[in-house]
Length: 378
Image 1 (cartoon, one colour):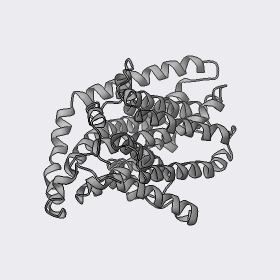
Image 2 (spheres, rainbow, N blue to C red):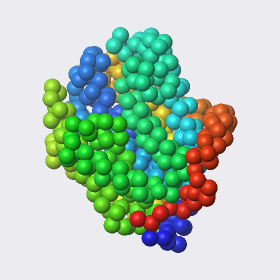
Image 3 (cartoon, rainbow, N blue to C red):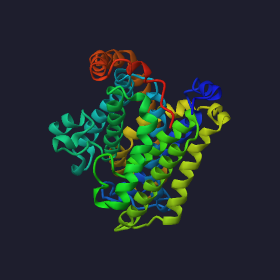
Image 4 (cartoon, rainbow, N blue to C red):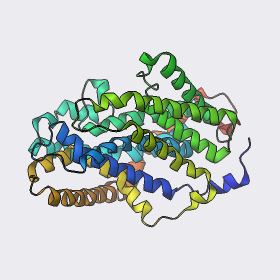
């Protein structure tokens, strides 16, 4: 199905403010989960006990699933029409600079004041510079950074498709991937933990297919792929509820969890409505810009400061002050590293573009590269 004039016009509006707001909401969910529940539950915060918000904050763990859903949507949009080299530069500038600075800050703070279980060794720090520390047998500097490894692995898939000059086939790749995941999940569940078959990737695939539908319209194959991705995500979440509830002071309700995941899908699907892509939400861009720095800084630094400053009698004073400090720190990280130094980072990552695009040209049959932006109707 060819792209309509309406869809082409929509593609000029690349900043989706509804998604900006959702991204910040996902960050708040994850912060609440770690500060009100997880840090206390896993013993990293021993100075305070659970508050009345803990049973609600428990559901914040699903903010990660929302992040992955949004990321799939955004990456499918941003990769459209790009070369592999352009994709590497844009994603590198977006992910790594703030991460490196946040990781260094976390290392300094937890090594100076944090629980010994959070201390970072030099080898561990160096391995984490890659965002894939497990490849070197090291754990993440901060527990939440595992999601960045998953994110980067998804980027690698998109990168390989672009590198092979198959960018125009992305609208086929994502539904095919989703159908493969569902098949494995149902028929060979023991293999569903393998790379690219893990249930978390179903959320990336879902978001990517939803972006494809927004851009190119509905087709039987896209609808089938989205159904497969959504089904895989539901099965994955359902299988993990019992495990998640084991040994915890509180438990999530399966009904509430499925309703929450369903709500994520419904809200993202609003992007199929043309006027929703043009919705203007005050401050949405500003708060969205803080989302990644907040995510990077909140966990182990938050645990360390909570454990050092909060007591049961002062907890409701410390929580707001700590969050205010987090927002200010995130703002400084964004402004100082992501904005003011952007040209420096861009120049550095730009050095990768020429060799990557050379490899893409080498691997791409004549004529295919120029067609990558066109897309294949499925």
